[in-house]
Image (tube, rainbow, N blue to C red; front, side, top):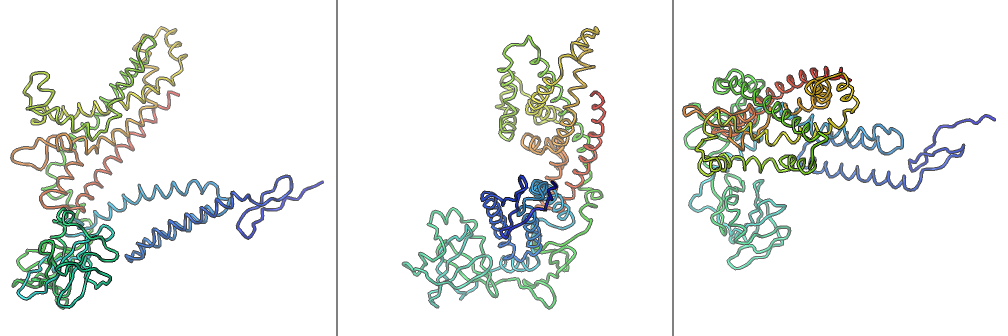
Length: 527
């Protein structure tokens, strides 16, 4: 008898029927419940993510959220498409934590983003006007109460003359009701706001002083913790000429620089973010203030990364070989001691090592009766950072080498010994090639990590020591620490320049890593 196979059916609840022994059976209640919960979770997360995007007018983000939600619903609301169910979360994480940071960094490199150039032109105008507010005779006064709402600072203002209450933030002033007035006419409670105590307000004194509530023609600023005044802006924006005027000077908008510039070339500190094309990338190569030390810094950076990898790998493999010997006793105890540096927080250990190298009270000088300025001369500073990274890095190589040694079949070593190979020959011809098969990819990734090991340098030497006549580049500076000093130095934060330099560093590491991974393919021949 021939049995005709019919395709799976779907009921109204979206469940799929499964056939067993020629009989169709609906999906279980547990499966239906799981799908309903998944549907609710996906939609709930989508609404949670879309709400602030809609409020801020970020329609690109709303579109991305809608596409991601549609893809998730498509994958999880049916029992089919099983591979997609596993690939979709991985794809989302890859886009969020790998692709997006790279794209965002590249977009910053094409802009003038930095201190004073983080917002829009309208935000820059508002900042210019509010920062120039000055109190004038007869200006309006308010009874001030400092409060918070959603952890944002708010001025609760009572106007005795008008009998009105207001809430003021950096976004503006609005009238409120449902307030309770205390002695002196100050607001003591307001619905939806948390009033700060005097101690709490004093702790945020800097924020209170800096807060300016924009109003027409000026802004409201605090005068202590109990009073506020409405001042007049000394600088005002004129849309007719697209300029800022005041104090006898006119600053005209320069859309290429993203700032208001006067006829004498001076500019207001508040600007806005604009695209600058490839100027940041070109400046990293052509600006003498930037590229003057790149060659020397890169040479030391390359030597540092290679030396750290070589030293940690050599010491880790040596330790693993010693404790792999069958006659060795107390192996577990010694292995635990060796792994301790790897288990300790690297951030704290780097600071400890910096103090150990201190000339006056460091343990190293006291222990050996020395007076060496370990971090004060180029040679000793470089030796010091290499020693620190050797101490921090070799336990990882030790663990990997220990595991790799235990996978090498004993028959290989026995066969080599029968053939008359010496201990060094067995290591060079059998053990080392098989170890490199497991270690080679890790050596390449370790090189990439140490090439950009910002903490390892900055927390120990801060890139120094520096020449007395040029504090730009230090003897232990890596490209990443050199970039940090250029981009976040005395001229303020320059995120565009930092992003441009980061792109070059990324390309250097990528090229070297690709070459390294191709080289490691040669070790596969040992299998």
